[in-house]
Amino acid sequence: MGKPKPAALEIRVLPWRPRRRKIKPDDLREMSTDAMDFADGDDSGVVLVVGILVTVLVFVFAPIAAVVLSIMFLPVEAGLVLVLGALVIVARFTGVIPWTVLVLTPEAEEHERYRLLHRAVRRVRELNGGGRPPVVWRWV
Image (tube, rainbow, N blue to C red; front, side, top):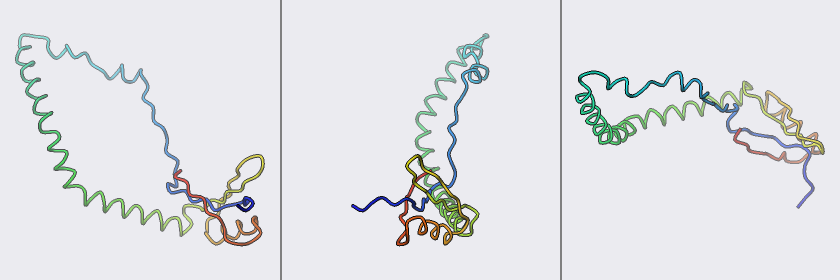
């Protein structure tokens, strides 16, 4: 193995950083309702029977509806993914989404951003002393 290069062209597959979403327990408590509030009154037997029938219908027809809807919307979803992928590639090569040069130092990793690919490749070659620039693929 050769000696490690001090710089590489970093290509992030997803150019954005996903955020973790957390639900606060207080929000859940405020939005929840008491299930027994619906069964109060004289017609609680009717509510129980209707509730059981609706539950059975949901358990029977929900998987069928999910399969039918997934088959119906598959071409739309595939087309949307292709269009968004093409837009991300065009944005990357036009400089809207910058290219990242990863500079490895003994202390830490540094990132430099360049709008155009040839400038990023030139910077990697300067830091490495020429040759082919190594490429690092990351999801985020």
